Image (cartoon, rainbow, N blue to C red; front, side, top):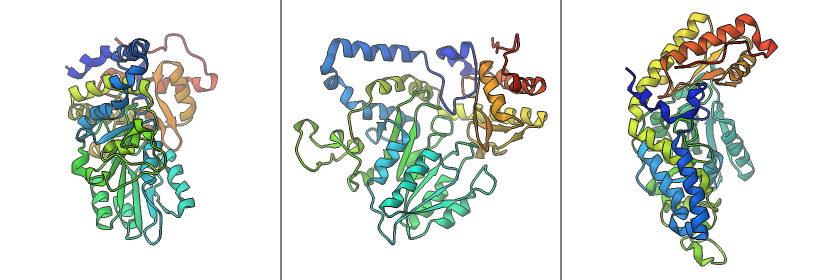
Length: 398
């Protein structure tokens, strides 16, 4: 008996779909309806007084929910619009002056943050990209070899978005610190599905978001800054929320706060923060360790099923080196993914990765078989060419 399926009724979309896309957007918890109504009611009845009632503190109060999951203490995480902005706040704290002006990252990072770091060349940064040998993982020794005394920042992903390969973050962080460099750890694809403690990893910074495995919706990215760095750094990407006395509206340079609030900038996106809470509370109550055990079992089964069909999987075979996604490559993978969506099998496609299939704690074992079987039907009938929904093929899960 799968005890985690007791949470399934909390996610409305699971009633009518085979939901295999939590790596991209986690299913919405039913409790979000109540939280969004609470937001609207607060605005309607309290008006401008809502800021003093708690809206101003939400970027940190909500961050505490994330902190409970990844091992950060209260006040150490702030919430932002997206990871690119969170990472930009970090880069704005540094000058790229030789000889320590290098940024080292891999070609398996999410492209949005690549664009950000490439843009730092105009500020004097020298960018070093470490390339994958197989498009699935990046050897730890290659990353470590690229980090030397000239390195300032090392933005790496804990779990790679295309292949779900788990990188050895601890080894990279330890070497970077020996070289005097700072590590920005992207935990977007690990928070909520792969257990870790950000303090034990000793990351200088961590960025991520809640819209995937934490089921918290868009607009809920987070930033962790190691406590001993907080008062040493002065972000240039800043604003009145980072000011020590924001309602004094002082003219001139900012006077930074002494706590994590100094990494905030403008007025927060309050509605998105309301949506974060239900998913994070569910994940906390279940425990990431239990979620991880189910994930390893189900992703192993997916790889087995795909192998039986002769499909290539572009995901590590070792469950310990694999996150929550199985990337499956086959002929016409993009077209097949579109046809799956039409049939209410929710997956996605990425170049060089194929179809990404991502079960979560609310996924039934039978849905694994249904997904692989439906792929086979689409390929056998060439439905990807017709883009027609055959009678009786809509997912039926009881």
